[in-house]
Length: 598
Image (tube, rainbow, N blue to C red):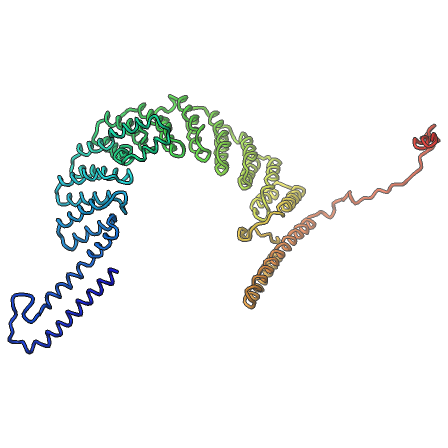
């Protein structure tokens, strides 16, 4: 609506101005002898210059007029008040009018209805005075900015911090420290409210706390405490700084970073035991994952400080954290514990801790922990002692990929020790986790092993195991997109490979031809049939590979070998001599005797 009215107004002024200028040009020849008067409006009504100035003024005032319209619609829009102050400063360059705008804004905006942060408006108001070196008024503005009932405690905390920053910029360090001490002091009204809420339930006390004005709750603001503690560390004394940190922990406004800063501050000033006491308080305040950095710093500093002189105390700390740490965060602490025992304790304890770690960590970290376990056992006890660790790994690892990797590593170890039969048994055990269609690398390792150390019988046994494993995995279906080129079973000889490529190319061409010449529904059906045909072709190729393997086995057979199984023994039936039966020759059977009695 404003745009329509403003455009109509400017068009009207332009049309009147154009008409006046045209009329003036027509009458110039007749009124050459007439002189101009001192006023803008002469006797004949010549007000062209006045109208031109009014039009220019109208166009220049357009942003301010729009701002006025927006503020009439919502006078609690903080962002629009900020824009208006900048427009006044840029166009009129009159500091007094800017101050009037800010004063009107802070009086008009209701903190509960404000769109935006009212604290930013107050801070900009004070910053304008600061830019003009009027520091007394800056302090007056900040003091007034502490009074409104903001919606959030964070808004009032921002004002306190901005107030202290102003004093710091002007080198009034003690004044800034005093301001933050005021901000962190509990008001008397809050003390009385807390006493009143002491006899109520937790829900009632929490409701009373949230209903209290922000001025009574700002003393527990983390933002205010962070700045106060920074100022105390920078310009305060050790006693006051320690008192400030202790008070923060007492009223439970400290954060994990505050605990770390406090401990570091005490350590820098040679208060080592007090520093460890601060860590102890910190680990009692928080739980995982927030307490994780505190525990890590605590353990590192303690071991660095005392090394092996207070070994039992260090062990107690590690046992304490291992009881509460989640499984996903435990590897870091187990590794620190192992490092402590290696350098300052007993190697036997380190291996025990490694064994515990392999059971405590999550499944994704278990393989890495077992590898570390194997490396440490090999380093301290020798290669042969790692067999027990490998057996534990095969028993506890649940992922097939991890089991395959451990089996290959274990078999390589036994092969290096000359235990060929043990290595073959391990490879046989690991074959149950290796699908020949997808994990061909495992079978290549076994194939190379049999070529190097096996014979015809062991090689046949490997092929038999491979076929049985492939049959066991035959019920497992894989998505085609998840299978790589190496995963697809193909024939072993070059002719079969070439034939497979030709068939695949022909199938692709047939699919492209069908798709280009059929309708949408027909395309979908034909593509499904082609996919089935491709799967059938792959199955045929797999069968051909099996036939090729059998032919290779027959070609490797020894023609001079004696096959005992082919001999057929002929059995001849003979009569039993009568002397064998003796007196029981003519005796009747039990059934005949029963019938005779009947």
